[in-house]
Length: 563
Image (cartoon, rainbow, N blue to C red):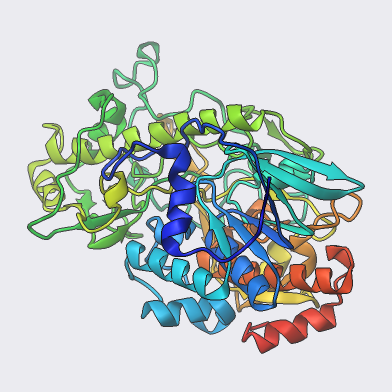
């Protein structure tokens, strides 16, 4: 049946989104995906369909709606706001002066640019969407895409909803819509020679060489110290790393950005189902290896200091050699595949879905739960295991989960921090050259300015100073000299692949450059620009690749975007 598109009240939005999940109340364990029972088929017709409830999805939908288009925002889960409402409130701003448009409007209205509340962020996003007249459907996992003549005709969701639109925007962290539409993409790290990037490939020496490397202590990686026959300790990769500069299919580590509290009503760190103290054997050895190491429970770059985790009121991130990042645990998340190989020559891009979407969601749910078990187990270990030095254990127990946040998921974040998924391959690929302003795009749709930043991609056995030990690999943090423009061409596919799709999150970028672009304020900026471009493409009846940049620029400047 046909369903006329209209703005929905916040209450009705929630009802529609939760129908497939009926029967679950507040305080459920966190989850990524649970099987959805399809309801009676419903067809929604709109002008702009945005898939992905991330900050980019929200701003894309709002901008297109403000330009008079009928817009539908589809969120995979029961929330809008992605990481900005899912844990990351200590905002990675970069240069504050580079932020304008809807991103700046959001931060102004939420009252601050950093350390706001997750619940407050989501409430504001919902308000802004409703003000713009955007129809929002929650709990809508993508099932399939119909394409014809290099255009997306419709997208069908597992709930029985089919969406027909003139323009589609993939605002997911993973790039599921672009892959289903057979748009080219890559996963992993390019070799150093692919784009002439000094930061590319494995074993970086530019930055982070001595940070979170177990204080460069000769810690044995084996269950029985110095006995290879006893096997590797958990959380160390059994695969051999590649040579310096070689590429691979690894992605940087994910974690949950927890909301912590040291107030009296804090929720004690839970003992997760499946807790295995042996999983933290490497950390136990590190904690007791050298009494000179200082445990700061925060970021540090000083010699003989480490996290091992960040403990602060509010958003608490990874901070340490063995910390809340599940190193080597995320490689299959983007498209369901992973091969532990290295290469000096850049492989051809991928197209399509190597793993069907439903199977991919189920695989991701297992990865998600492994991250929950690992990170909750890490906190429980630090708070209760006898191998943890007493003073450190007491300090950890001084914190707990914030009872005011994430009430729907037992005070644990509902969003895993997907730092890197698929990356589209279009006619323009952002690289280190752009980040360093050695190449300046003339079709700017917004500015990025955060340092090129990658968390670790693998934890491996190495030989160092004649000792067999363990090191983390893949982390770097290298500054950009100034804010740099993001090219419009980086968010549109090749025209021969798809003419009515825009991709503001999994945009066309190298792994190195993506480490700078991948920040939530930039996603809001690029989302707004994608929404404006979609509206202009409809108005002028042109493919997204042929949108008149002068008109787009005029609209963005009118919307207070900083170019």
